[in-house]
Each structure stands twice: as C-alpha cells, then as structure tokens.
Amino acid sequence: MTDQKKRPFSFKQSGEWLENLSIVMRFGLTMALSIGVFFYIGLRLDRWLETKGIFTVILTIFGVIGGARTVYRQVMNLTEKNKDTDTH
Image 1: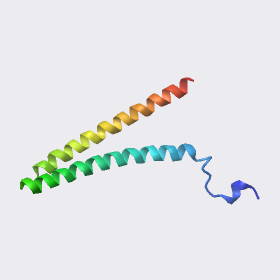
Image 2 (image 1 turned 90 degrees about the vertical axis):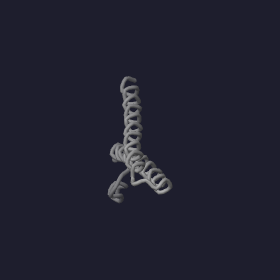
Image 3 (image 1 turned 135 degrees about the horizontal axis):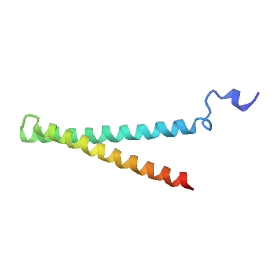
Image 4 (image 1 turned 120 degrees about the vertical axis):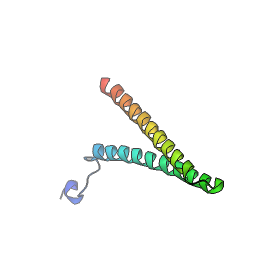
C-alpha cells in the first residue's frame, strides 16, 4: 500500500491552500483584535467618565479604520513579496 492511500490528507499537495487559508485567517484576526481592543477601551472609558457610549462608538470606528489599514499594509507586503519571487 502506498503512502498516499494511507493518508486522506496530504500537506504536501495542499500546501498552497493551507498557506492561503492562514493568510485569510491572519487578516480576520487582525481586524477582530483591533476592533475588540478599541471597543473594550471605549467601553471602559464610558463607564469611568459616565458617558452614554460616545467613546465606545468613536473608538470602535478607530478600531475598524486601524484594522483595515493594517490589513491593507499586510496585503501590500504580500503582493510585493510575490512580485519579487515571480521575477526571479
């Protein structure tokens, strides 16, 4: 029996798929953590200053913008690396 028949999933054949999945997961985690951290800080500020959600809303928007900016920079870095490897 060959080694291929024993294993239903081969990492060698699925390497590109797994790499793309890890990139997408990294983008999602970057956005989620950015939004979550800024939301939490806004929530704590609202409780401390006894305001009615203004800091939560403002800082959540900053979290979305900051996360999107970080993801954009990550995408640009990946495309630059791909351009460099494609030309060589």
